[in-house]
Image: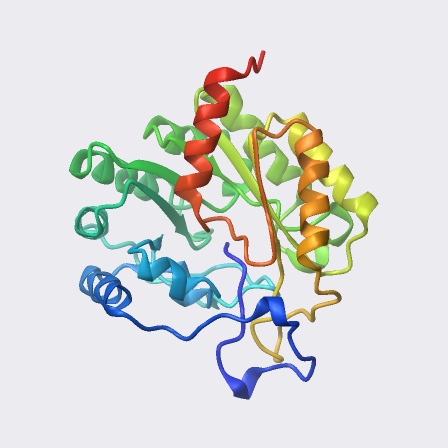
Length: 307
């Protein structure tokens, strides 16, 4: 899922945010237009459900990251603001409503994510694939980036989504191996690597991407190993961003706020390990400026021998 940020003073931790982590309040006509289109679609967005700090900037540019299969997740991760509860059944008309909203926003590139649906026999892979197909049918020139849960690394589920031919398959590693059991208690580090490995085995043409959040107690050695592990499964794109605590109740505390200069240094380390594209910064999220990152990746892949 996406990284999160506090949005109300009632929930604000006592530790003051550093100045580089301040964002403006929502506003503007384009922001309002985006909000209305999303409301009309009745499809959730990770921008709202995960309390993303970039919502002002992205919605003002008519960008949004849609979250399908409802707004209730079957997993409880202590870094995530998305509600954990028994999900509602998947809505059969959601693919069409999603495709209509994306067409109205005139998106050149869209990120579609989803809550974990461990309750469904295929963990939501079929519904996800139908959403991708609906978007491609409605908006022929729109590239689609998918950001699903791990599907327990089931090859059949990953294949179902790959067969829908998204242009980019994103699955976040989220944190380093040493912290995975605390940060993602219902996930596994190696399982996430296996998802990315399987995508490349099934569909080598699909660009793969992963993201990690900083500030949970990781070390430079932890991060270097994680970057190396991602490259070992031929992950093309890496995003590195700051973890921000959603609330004081039930969410992990921030151990460290990294400076912009530290993000630059870690981005350089990742690039040196061979990622095609790296986005590293305090406000970087999986879907932040995702279209620009994808375009840069395609340009570089067109000129670099990846054999």
